[in-house]
Each structure stands twice: as structure tokens, then as C-alpha cells.
Length: 162
Image (cartoon, rainbow, N blue to C red; front, side, top):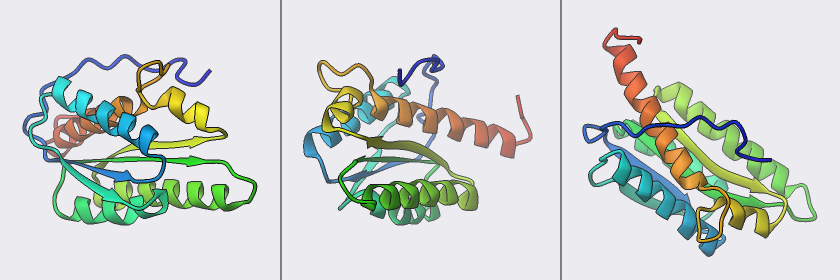
């Protein structure tokens, strides 16, 4: 089962962080749920005025995440969904987006929340989108992971590793 073993993350005060979301536009219902979930996390973590930028699809997430990291955002939450079709396109897009987002995080030392759903069916995506009736809220999870990681990076940079 997806989500089994997930850590429980208590919200911490993140009002000092500059936060951005880069969200794909495909699958509007799923994306609405993911973005709403991120906003719920921002409210719980006291993030003020997060920026939301939309891109066409998942493939475009890394380049815009990189641009946002270069602008000094402490955390960038990448949200998207790719649903398997009958061609290898799914694998290429998922791998490119995943590798690109990883590179952004490592190259910029910026917390990147990974909210890219890679699903076999639309129902799987709906189940993870944080919508009414969904079993998971991956937008919330990606945002909270990015926020906690951004706070950790700040502590480490100040020499306070614990």
C-alpha cells in the first residue's frame, strides 16, 4: 500500500521561509487537489504568501523549479501527475522529471518537495490527490517535506546540525 510507513510530521513555524510551488496543468482535478493540499500544509506550517507558478506538464517542472531556486526560494514544491499510457512516453517523462528535480535540489541546495504522482491509472492519481474521498494527500506531504527540509538546511548552514 502506498503511504504505508510514512512519518508523522508535526508542523513547525516556517513563516521565515520563502516558498514557491511549481505545478503542472495536465489532469486538472488531480492538480487542484495537489495544489490545495500544498496550501493546507502552508497554513499548518504558517507559511505566508507562497508563490504558485503553473507549467504545461511534468516535464517542465525541473526547469522552472531551478529558476525559482535561483531566485532564492528556500523551498520549491513540485506538483504534477503522469498517468501511464500505452507507450514508453510515461517512463521518459517520469525519469526526466525525477532526475531533473533531484538535480535542482542538489545543485542549488534548495529543498524540493517531490509531489509528482506517477500512476498507472487515473483512479490511483485521484486516490492520492487529497480530494474528498482520497486515501492520501500527496500535495500536503510534498509541501510539508519541503518545509521541514528547508528548515533543516538552514540549521545545517548555521552549524546547528541537530
